[in-house]
Image (cartoon, rainbow, N blue to C red; front, side, top):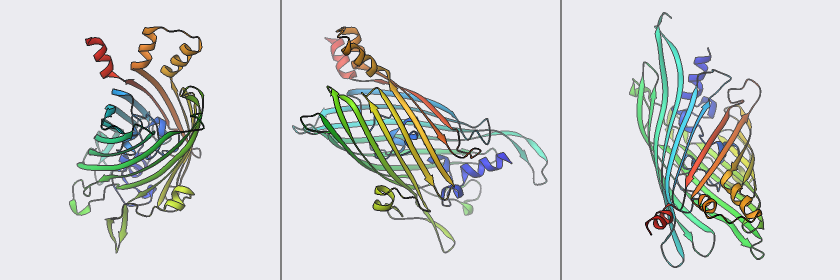
Length: 399
């Protein structure tokens, strides 16, 4: 019985307010964003998983950089103990390439590999006779290309991006292989300086449309289901009090609405053609009110000296009967070392170079619903390694 529930939950969107297949494509891989209720389309962060929510990049490390992260999560632990959700991401980017006297060029390439292992299952015939065990899985390989422009005068940037995906669903006796794409844009004003640079104001606006493609079918094309084509729209705002140089206390709030762009008209399931679907900026973004057909994500992050990040959030899906509280945190160990060296006034060239070229951050988040709910007690953990200013490092070595 549990296996039937699992397959229904993952392959159908009855629990998400629509009629679509391959719903596993909507499972968020980011421990950072999951801590703020899954609101990632406009959130301003250095999260290497940000391309999942919006192909248009957010904050990029300085210079030529390389980032990598890998996670493995027990998915739906209240239903089964052998569902494993795995993600591996790598990103190469360049920040602040001189474009003109007033603007920098930014660009990035991200590769995200997702695998949802559904464990071992029993195959039976029409009469219920056991035919043997089989393993099933769902996977997606995605490559994201993003380019943006950042002002050299003000901390303002605009980026656009596209993601190309190949999704595979292998259910033992049936399988499918489909191609989809995402696109999106993001506007960010990150810590805009006020009061002699003692206060910074932040605002972000983001939009993405994901999983655009043909209908999905396994053995009978006449029974094809639409892909989970989704629109996301969100806003982020906040402020930072600077206490030590650019470091201090920062608070960011984020609201996001998500609409599955699938509807039934005259007993026929079709895609909605509008960009926003049923999303309303006032009701779903500014007021963050939940209603049928719309999934609401909202969260808050408190940043202490760019070292410790505390997060809380909420995910509300009335159709899917989900009212999930989330929490999470991150620790940037490289920034902790930088602040420590500065506090005790140590000027060690090797340690300073380490913090300039290498960054290491650890993130955690969890979901909490009613006890026994499929989404209760899911935990996400990841470590992100960043090599930054690689171009400067190579130049120093070749001197």
